[in-house]
Amino acid sequence: MSSPLLDVRDLRAGYGAIEVLRGVDLAVGAGEIVALLGSNGAGKSTLNNNISGLYRPFGGAIRFDGGDIAGTPSMAIVEAGLIQVPEGRRVFPNLSVRDNLELGSYRRGRAARARNLERVVAIFPRLQERMTQFAGTLSGGEQQMLAIGRGLMGEPKLLILDEPSLGLSPILVEEMFALIARLNGDGLAILLVEQNVVQSLAVAHRAYVLENGRIALSGNAAELAQNPDLRRSYLGH
Image 1 (spheres, one colour):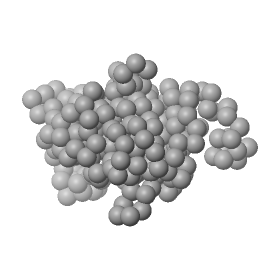
Image 2 (image 1 turned 90 degrees about the horizontal axis):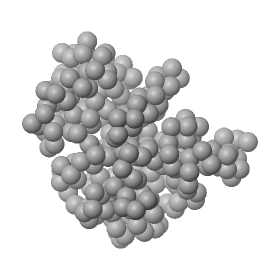
Image 3 (image 1 turned 135 degrees about the vertical axis):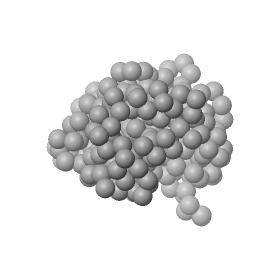
């Protein structure tokens, strides 16, 4: 990869005096799906939150689309086109579906809001049916659609999806991974942060495995799926 869209080098980060990430290297190229795999407590959310500007790293470099964003305010990072769909959906429950979606274009994509709204409801027809409902009345699967749709409203260059399959039924999990492949097919770069190893590796181009704040494995997703250490640790065989 000559010049990655996202390039994380030797990232050290944590909370207070506690170092969670101990020198993480990770890259996402334009048009790629890259999976970041790891169990709870491995440091995945800490990495997300530092990339997204919610925390200032202890050290290392984060470059996005050619610019240094380490420690940059999250609003500026969104404006640059790096948008995170957080774990747990984080929709605004007392606002309508439409209001939630339109808030996604507050920092970026405002000029094309109407066109982007049409695109989102074409991807998620169910949201069209729920447009005037309060977001808090939606099912878990619908809230996940809304959270991703809100992210798409900002015209991302890179979309970080944090545990998008969490809490969904098996059928909705299948639909979610099919959607991720479809969005990527339209050219969107995606950093997929997941515990669902099998399906993440099936849609990703490359993957990293984060363990105890360090990258333990990385490489081509199809090859990693056959890695005996990964299969033993995450698949039980």
